[in-house]
Amino acid sequence: MKKIALLSAAALLASAPASAEYLYGFGNISVNYLDWSKNTQDRTGFQEDFAYLELEGGAGFDWGEVYGFFDLENVQDGSDELRTAYKGTIAYKIADTDFRLYGQHYASDSKGFAANNTVLGGQYRFQGDGWFVTPWVGAHMTITNPSWNDGFTGFNGGMFGWTAVYNFTAWDQKFWISNWHESEFARKSDYTDVSGETDDVSMNGALAFWWDATEHVTTGIQYRYAYNKLGTVGNQNAFIYSLRYNF
Image (tube, rainbow, N blue to C red; front, side, top):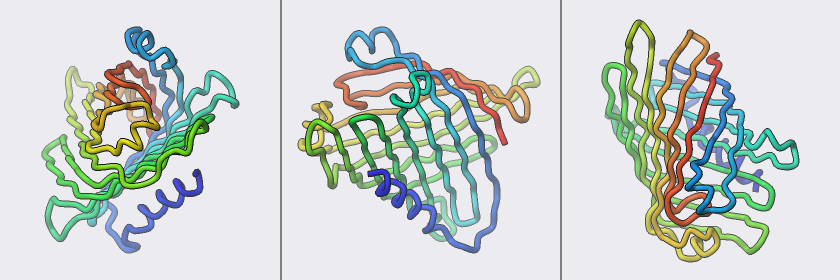
């Protein structure tokens, strides 16, 4: 499972042109703490608060953009309980327009469960002075490997979402707001029977407020939300407290 996930992510990046003009880039490492709401924990019975480390980066070129992160989760409980998750995206410009060919791959691995999700489709980039919004939509392929059954492999409907960022200055300080969102639709019943989420639609994302305290230090609070996702029927929500070091 891990080999499949790594090869898929590498393929996304390898498809980028070898000769390209570099426009911008960023990278950071962060420590984060996710605190589920009491209502979520009472309803699910299994969601637990956890700390995680994250390595994140992205870059823009004349042909498009790439982005990725790698998470090491549940670090407070020792090596036996560690989980990993990573995501890679690529957006390739179509001629001299704001339309892009879009691909993303997400993988997670924990004791007793592993999953890979790949989306191939299209994206459009809206942008202005200090802000951008990038809605996208595509076909969704899923591989799950739970320890308690045979899992699911195959086409799993579609997915749409967006990433949005707005930068602003107040009191001589730099702040920004970000939102990522994903919704799955027309999911296969064979998949939902395995995942326990029952519905053929889902929602997943986070709305965040960030403060660039210095050139290298950013702190933020994120409102994490999900619906019919993460193995749970109905709504879930949490707050994430983050401290980043920017390279």
